[in-house]
Length: 450
Image (cartoon, rainbow, N blue to C red):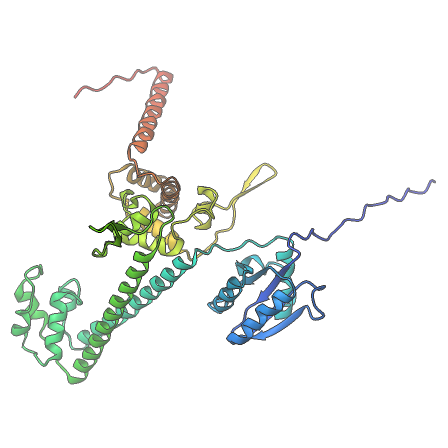
């Protein structure tokens, strides 16, 4: 019996080609930072540094000594921001990566292994940098997010006022729509000032309140205890303090937006009688400033008001060049499916939960189209009838995102007639389908006369 011929298998090359030979990896911590560089750049390819500012500059000096021109780090809380800014000022290309894209390989975990793994993945080009707008937009984004926190804390003290009124069995916050309105704050101020007569308090009712003065008077009959009036006073003081902080934050945001320079249009200026050019000083108009920055009036899009556009601007900026197409822009907001194909079949991708403030704006705008009479409103209602509310909101938000992307990139105003042509085509296809079905069943369609 002949021996079986031993087959020779080609040895596979398991090392990936190095695309970034000068890449480094950084593992961020609250008190210590671990940095890995290529093994041939220093006797110690991994070093640790404290998080003091002086040590961060020492870290940047060591990276430059090792001829590292690009690094990858995870977005760990807010600890990465100081080091990111220092390295960016030194001219080092910093890739801020998603932690979910790195920790898919099982095994033992340590800070040293993490920074080495980051350095390897970044050197072979397997890491994708997260989107980060320009520095001027980041400053406005920080202020807008801080303003959101102030609003949340002010709402907490409104709930405290409700609790104090409930403990005194005063039902005024159930009679009027907003306890922080003109009537609500006037009544709260009077109670804190010592007034407990329901008739006198009811006289503070504004004429726009729908509830009658008798209903308001009955809701102000209760047990006015000193301890509850004291807690009501402190809650009111805290609420007004946060309202003043919000006003100060709004003024700072307005100043940043007013000073923000768009790429196509410079600062508004006029020439005086002597021929010199002076900047015009006018009251702050958020709508005009956003139109100047984006180069197009985005409020023409259905359900897009100024505040929603301001939120989008604070998170994205006006430059969408980092998104090569509208599908990549929608994918970044997780408004399109992450499906794939294998063996000729479609494979459903996993549901990814992300916290994207821009996507939330588009979703809220899509949901508010429920009663709109425009084409987008009809599209939302048809999607809701076919797929249900959650998927209809996502599909409509995806369409809004594509519209927003094309308007900003092309600097063209919103044109509703484009959708009118699409709707006319849809109506024609429906008519052809009905006529074909009628012929198959032996009937003919006759146009109705009104």
